Length: 396
Length: 109
View (tube, rainbow over the protein chains, first blue to last red):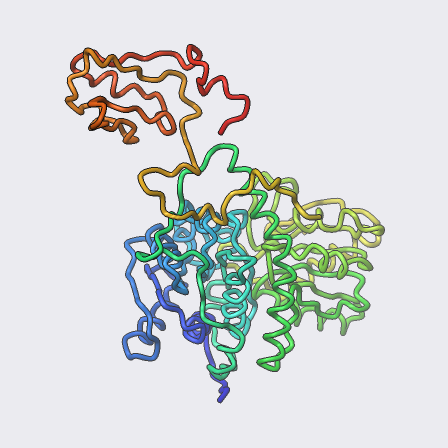
């Protein structure tokens, strides 16, 4: 029977992996994601979960181990944080190119230098173009849901891609919230056992990861790009099935909050969206028609849904939570994708960006109110006078 | 919106192929060779040093003909075998000097 527990984001991810009945797990410690592996090792040790638990000698080894396990036909699970995510970087592209639907949980941690344990999205965002599915959760419940949904989408025979299932470090990974755990029978209906099309085998030998010729490289790129064009349909179907089987109401691509009549809006990813929603309630009480859009996916980017959600808005604040030094807007990553997404709209909203939630900073109510003030000013002046504001470092 | 890859250029899914026996003919890797080793069978003593020194296993011994055989599909022209040959039986000849030289290919294989 379904039951409700108070779980941190890490515990919810571990439960997700357990309910997905993962067969191979590879761990290496780094805060804050490491709590996921602590949970899983306990489950394996006490017989709750029948999986091979491998200790990697580093993150590069971790992803290599699960790549091998996936190639042999196992449902494989690993994870990391911060510099661990970047240490494994080399293996990301072959994991996607070889079409191994393994899953990697990421609980964000700011990159060095110097060591700072706080949450920031730059670690995972750096890997967004490696051909993996990628998205952020905003609650422990969503971490659990995304773990199952990502396996289902990644293992679809048309898709066959690895997945980054991301959550904010600490804000989400270490703060408990209510999580409804379903019945295992429901999960098995939603997520059938993984069946690899061409697994490594001694009875039917196949060759994985051969050297290809220069003129085959572009072809493989094009084949992967074609796959990403159909991923949205697969996500839509998977989320519809999830909602039906688990009696839930998850939006497939983006979460919209009070967007029906919004004149100004926030574009924000991950757990900071929870603060943003409360700030919007305060703004609405003061008479400002504010709203919020939160993408559940970064890859594939929900271009159509985001453009539709913002088509009647006058000004948008893109809240970055990651860095892109020297980028087109001189701030974060999200604003580049957002502005590109809105470019073809007939009535293009004004867009600016705010550097916030960096290095473990909390985004406060007053920060959202500061952003709203800038948005109001932009609407009044009918122009974007500045492309990036650094929260806490602006002259006021 | 769909991306079209011509049938003849398609690559197996994830480049996963049946396991090759001996060599992988689907992915030949010698088209950047600019010289190739040519053997003088009079000088060759069948000492197998070329076989042992090739990083891509491109030399083998043909027992019936009693001579060394060169694999044009995978030799990159690195010339290690030429350098290592103790009897001076190997020499580097420009690909341009051969009708089937890989530098003459209109389309890389």
